[in-house]
Length: 313
Ligand SMILES: Cc1cc2nc3c(=O)[nH]c(=O)nc-3n(C[C@H](O)[C@H](O)[C@H](O)COP(=O)(O)OP(=O)(O)OC[C@H]3O[C@@H](n4cnc5c(N)ncnc54)[C@H](O)[C@@H]3O)c2cc1C
Image 1 (cartoon, rainbow, N blue to C red):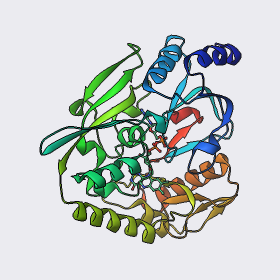
Image 2 (image 1 turned 180 degrees about the vertical axis):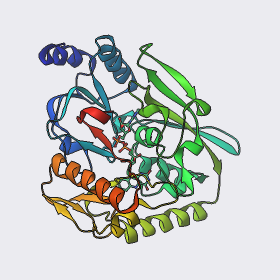
Image 3 (image 1 turned 180 degrees about the horizontal axis):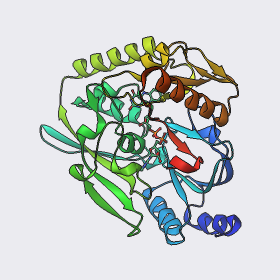
Image 4 (image 1 turned 45 degrees about the vertical axis):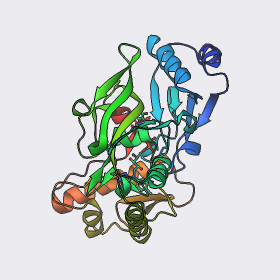
């Protein structure tokens, strides 16, 4: 196993302005929870990002990829090896011609910024995703979406770093394995998304703005958006709403330490103070047991766990 000091020295040559040692991931997750990464690398451009991945890949150093941290529960002890944060500086938006527009967006771009761009230029297709806090990379990896729209439905191809070949390659939509909040990019050692090409069409700006506004209002009314959370903790089982199962099991408002099942929406666990990852994890386990005992239904977490051996990715 490579020493952290040597790794830091080498990585400083690759991404001179982007190396942080013992960086607490609580500062990079919307739950505001998570211990330190040995090294966090925040490359300032695609070249640095690729060189970083080539470096860690060639030495089999563990490497977690971080977007906006809005779907993550990170262990209180943090994670070993490198966390690569795809930064906003990786932004690049390019507009194709004609009625059907292809938009190439780098992974670190926030979905919010992409939607703002779509609104300005009258591009329709993903306006229903307004309000999902995500980077493009995280959104594509998770196939983020709402009941009537997912980002995967608009991905044409993805430029991704292949951790085996140690080089970037294009992956076309039909190879991305998009499913309900899943894709091939969530598998262990899966390619790292560097950019995604979205297929959109030209539309009416007023209509796009109306849909975005409507979706934001619905979120504001139904979700605890002012609280620190990682969004929906569990996937909806086929034919059921995870939130109503948790509510019917009598768990709304239950608190363990500072982790609280939101009284507003039972599928959200919020950090109501200084919750630890352990508080949240205990609550997750308790919810799964209670829903299983009450309804015989197994809830599967949507939130990604880092630093907990069994589901680390
Ligand atoms: C208030 C709130 C509301 C939410 N509402 C919704 C919703 O309506 N619908 C929905 O789908 N989600 C929702 N979420 C969850 C979250 O916003 C999405 O899952 C989002 O896609 C995560 O993106 P991210 O950039 O934050 O990814 P992160 O949380 O940083 O990472 C999530 C996963 O993606 C992987 N990943 C990140 N970037 C890359 C990359 N470049 N290449 C490969 N893998 C990568 C990570 O390794 C990790 O496994 C909500 C979250 C919050 C806090």
